[in-house]
Amino acid sequence: MPEPIYRSIADDLRRQIEAGELRPGEQLRTEGDLRDHYGASRNTIRDAIKLLITRGLVETRPGQGTFVVETIIPFVTTLTGDPEESTSEGDTYLAEVGALRTPTATPPDVGIQRAGGPATTELQLSDSTPVVSRHQRRYIGGIPWSLQTSFYPMSIVERGATRLIQPDDIREGTVEYLREELGLKQAGYRDIITVRAPDTVETAFFKLPEDGRVSIIEIRRTAFDDQSTPIRLTVTVYPADRNQFAVNVGDVPAEVADPSSAETSTPDADSGPSAHSGQEPST
Image 1 (cartoon, helix red, strand yellow):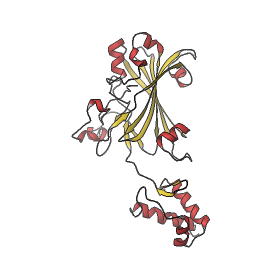
Image 2: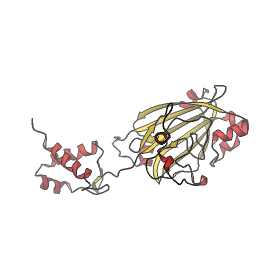
Image 3: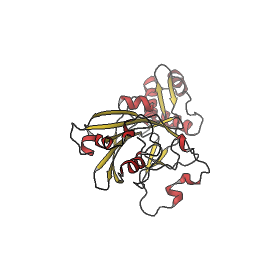
Image 4: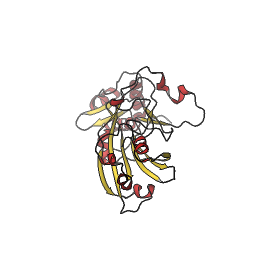
């Protein structure tokens, strides 16, 4: 059975994209020009474009046309690490192949609210218990990378960890801060990973196509002290089109576990986390 014409057209355009004849950000010919070039009907051309959109190779922009999708070198995040380590920013260890790209984050948006949803369950609180939330928008090399919100029981603030309710970065990281301020040691953490469709806020922040074809990866990390009491819930969301994740178990060669270790330079501590940053959030 012969291949449908729209698939042949889509394959030819895909070949041009992969060969670099059509570059990222470049506009495809108009629908009329493509009809003339391939001798095909309007519906055939539209079906070919839909197939390329499904494959993530092109995107349509209302009132502008169809463009080759900009490619992003994936950000590789290692989820495993020493629970007692802290970092200046973020909750992740970046092991990126190639040149280092500097992670940055907005100052935390701080709020106090009643526990609800995951905070109630993961922190083992009642719905009436107040929690502190610290939210950050995070970038790598200026590209939106992730959204992160950490929740802490208000009782931790009442014990003296008042920097949690200040809208400023905790440069040494909250793991170190809580250990030094309260003697509260993070002994471990548990991650739950889900994949879902983006909401409107995530679609706008990450500049995702509105048809929902790019999924969101949501990681809920619950941290526990040495008495097995949950002390923090961190919810981080990542768009699937620019993120990969690694889990290292046992004896993994250093050059594999940390490809960026061969780099000769790292950002200054005040500029945000480097590709060698630790596991826990400043939020």
